[in-house]
Amino acid sequence: MTATAARPGRSEDAPDAPPDGAALPVAGPAATRRAALRLIRRDGRAFALMLALNALAAGAGLAGPWLLGRIVDTVRAGGGVRTVNRLALVILACGLVQLLLARYARYVGHRFGERTVARVREQYVDRALALPAAVVERAGTGDLTARGTSDVTSVARTLRDAVPEVCVAAAQALFLLGAVVVLDPLLGLCGLGVLSGVFVVRWYLRRAHGAYLAEGAATSALAELLAATAAGARTVEALGLQERRTAASEEAVERCRRTRTRTLFLRSVLLPVVDVAYVLPVAGVLLAGGALHGRGGISLGVVIAAALYLRQLSDPLATVLFWAEQLQSSGAAFARVEGLGQAPRAPRTAPAPLLPRPSPEASPAPATPVDDRIDVTGVHYAYGDGGRSPAAHRDVLHGVDLTVRPGERLALVGPSGAGKSTLGRLLAGIDAPRRGSVTVGRVPIAALDPAVLRRQVVLVTQEHHVFLGTLRDNLQIAAPEAEDAALYAALAAVGADWAAELPAGLDTELGAGGHRPDGSQSQQLALARVVLADPHTVILDEATALLDPRTARHTERALAAVLKGRTVIAIAHRLHTAHDADRVAVMEEGRLTELGSHDELVAARGAYAALWHSWHSQGPS
Image (cartoon, rainbow, N blue to C red; front, side, top):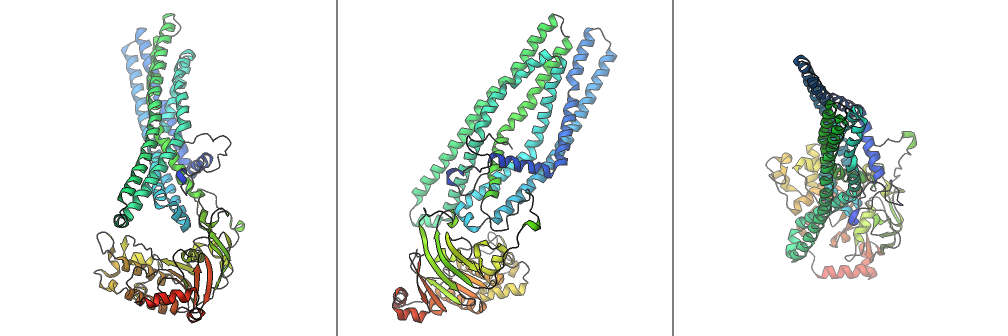
């Protein structure tokens, strides 16, 4: 995996700016090289063995042309058939040795590649799982998916196939050029004419890295657009957005076409020039060797051997150039994969197997909440850069102060866009405030280790996901060690009576080819996971929005019984949730304007009273 020179005035360590405003960074050339070297060092013995075997194979391959030149000189000198036969057998033996060594070198190289790409895949998964939810949301699934599929596959192909092939070819090329120089220095100078292609290769390398990065970014953008369009197909159809989405898709396809045309142009310049560079040295050696032989300077066998060496040189150089595109493409892909390690990470959960781990003495012990109390103090939040952006971003929360007591039920209400869900994300530790603090037990929520955070606060939204696998698999995501009795109890707690009627019970496959849960069943699965996770605080952000009113009311009552003694923060437009809560917090335009019990706020005749009377007069179900 190659890297180009650093841009003027810019450190190679700095990550490349994500093309087209992508949220996930791209590793800079220096960081990419260091990561590649770390991969090699992790399996250094296999890599060194591969190089040694390739060198031996290349050395064995040098015998053929030299011995063939000896045969020509022997015949011209009137030598006997026995000498020719002996030299021919040596050529055959050397060819057999070269074949065996090259075969074993490729075997070692492929094993090295497979082990190394396994480390790359494992590291990618570790890093992807360590990304904060807010980073994943901003990046979009298209970029993350493209890096984990096409980019990792490109790196895998390079490590598995290109690296062994290029090592073999490079060793052969160096040995062949050295052999020509040893035969005759003047002919060696003619042979070095093959290096004239280096100038166009340098021209290609200086442009190819950026071109392939742009191609990868365009592919990610197209994947993101297509995924979003497919997921929202019903919305697109209902709102008549087909032409707009089609135009956006065509524009994304056109960007992909332009970036791929650019890389194709670079290859169309590189390959013809290099093809010419193969022929010129052979012609030069034949002309110069013929002149020297005519003057008695060298033997005909030496000229033939040098010409054969240079003719053989075209094969390893062709192999290197054949893989040059893959090396550049995979170099850009590896920069994108490695860039995931430079994205913001959840605290203390960003394992990087290729990096040295700090000693336990050097790592401070993580802070542990002293109790379950949640305090929001002077919180300001602006979307952009995860809420840590400068004041140039417009705040959507303005100086919010709130204390959530352990065990209470707090309802967050207010008109759409008032900041309820944003405050819920801050309370759940998904985002961090731009100013102010959100703490649980005097520890900043966003700074908690995710494993600790999940035992403290869980956010349940109206968005849900059913994973491929059995019903048991979907539930044990929240509690891997949970027994069947606990799983059935969690389902019963959220009113999921349908689970008992499934043909294979907890072993029923969900999704394609099995049971397809509808929207309300999927939401009940999400709520059952909350029951199994057993946090002390649960934030419900329209968590029952996809349920019909009767089922929603039944589920909320069931959850209220299950969550007795725990803190519940409910964000809802159905004000019966607020009626049942211990306290109600009213949000308006990013500010907390009212706080108190239902009866107190109704009696105050403020914003909540207006909401309550408006909702109540419409006859709530």
